[in-house]
Length: 184
Image (cartoon, rainbow, N blue to C red):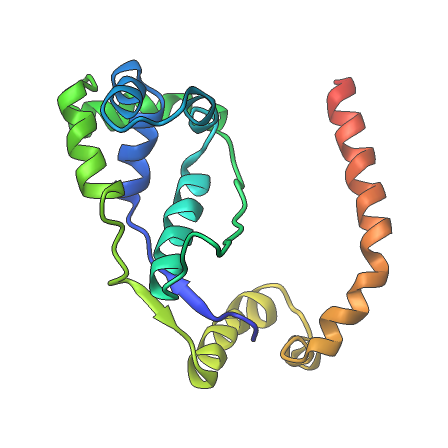
């Protein structure tokens, strides 16, 4: 119920930017033609498909809200490029004839970065927030068996505030899991 905007991002955009960020010609284009600093280029190579999606959504959000250079938007890089090594081959074969060239980089820049659209960004009012919340009914109540009353309780901020007391426990569980995975 706290969602202010939703943004639809095409997988064509995420796929092609993933190819750009993971090719020598793509990174060379960004450096030579667009002046992207090496420090930023090194970071882009770690962005997975969802991370790229989140960045595009953040850009569209900033444009929709008419944010300027003194404003900030924070997004999360939710995945890394290392999760998708086989995707690069599939994407370049499908979209670029089995290779990614400097010319492809220029096309990808122009289509997906030079003018990020706001056409698929929607500011939400109360009605839209309720519609989005209600989409969870099938997943939580019908599929997962969550009691309807518990599902409905999630509409209120008090439900979420009460969960804060569990954060240290969850942090400990995550640290324990990560330690077990790292130990092999």
